[in-house]
Image (cartoon, rainbow, N blue to C red; front, side, top):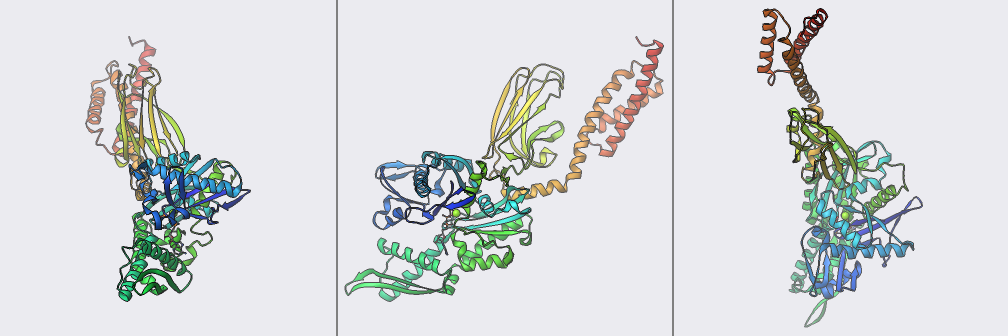
Length: 579
Ligand SMILES: Nc1ncnc2c1ncn2[C@@H]1O[C@H](COP(=O)(O)OP(=O)(O)OP(=O)(O)O)[C@@H](O)[C@H]1O
Ligand SMILES: [Mg+2]
């Protein structure tokens, strides 16, 4: 079962017989309002029934719980405390029941979607709510990823997709890079306090004003009237997505001494568009910004997926067309259902029902450790499918070294100083040995939620240490990822040279030590000895500042002397001159 757990509405889908089925709730609707009404612990309503209670018993109605997932918020209802996880679990339980009734089968496993910006705590809270609802949450996936899946984009060539998700209470925009069937949210932005509800507000305010002008009555304090107004405003808004005019009519909205008063208003699409234009333009500014922050142009985007009920508004469609052209705007999937459909597809992939897509979440950046000279050694490569685990062996650089420091980095550059540091820890009690002898195994394990566990063990003493860090793009701005990758390409040559220099320095030290060891034992002319000593001195002074070319010259010169020494040594041995 794929579940789109929305701020305003939830939607579920299941995948069976190679097909996606949208679940209908008891009212026969595919969208279930994210409202919970708690009369008592064993009298809980979810969806439209709960929303209807707003008019009569609003203090027992909870809405928009998604905003508070992972927070300490407590809902106190009739003296009993509920956490956001409790409330979300009531919704999920009800969705599960609807689905079971609809397909007449038990459902155990679910994939639940969350916004790309949800952090670890918010994701875990969502999993917990699912478990409390009796679901085995096999995966949490990002809403924009789910949207891409619903369009079966993995089957087409590589694409850069922009997901414009405008729901009831939040606006999210994400850029998803699809390469070889792998999804990577490279940038995300939005406003989590902007949605279709703001449009309803605009209409309600207009109606209040007109009503007060006509009848001298302020309805804003009247709960009953207000909920009628909101209801009518939303209906009119939805109608205006297909019609040019919406007639708003609320009979008996209130009464005065002369009797009942009815509210009548004709709202034209053009008037509505004037009300919301400012908001729509604001979302487009966010879209443009996230594109330019990723060093992209609108023309680089291959496909635009509109998600969320509010994208059905013609003005929004128009703005998207103007920015991206009509052909790029996807229209085949209902924006209300796309997220739940994607979640169901992901579920089917995980259970092996679909195998011609390789949808996986991937780690967008390499993860690794620092070694001598500030060099970055990846342990898990960029674009690895997660979950994943990998180990590499490292060693000491000094004789009898007892402690190694393990610095964990994320990035694509060969220099740690150019990458992001995620954490650090020390491994103590390393076996006493010559430099290079101890075997220290470092293991990186990355879980599906972007949590990285790094452990190090000395294979001889079994001394070990573990650390857990969050690699999720929250610690790092999502829009940075694209730049990081671009930068790494740009600096590839410099980085290779940097790496080569470190290798050369270590080779030079190695040959130098051999030469020093032997040169005194061989009876060279003073001239040659001086030559060697001069060279060694020069190298000593310059080794850390020399250019790549210089280092290479030093190395070649040392190799020349080494050959010379080896040759002489052999001659001496043959002549029996060496002690
Ligand atoms: N045809 C339509 N025209 C305009 N607005 C619509 C239409 N259909 C639905 N909406 C609006 O879309 C909003 C609900 O969108 P959606 O169900 O995508 O939200 P959600 O996913 O629950 O919220 P969020 O994305 O904020 O978590 C409501 O404000 C609703 O009024
Ligand atoms: Mg949504």
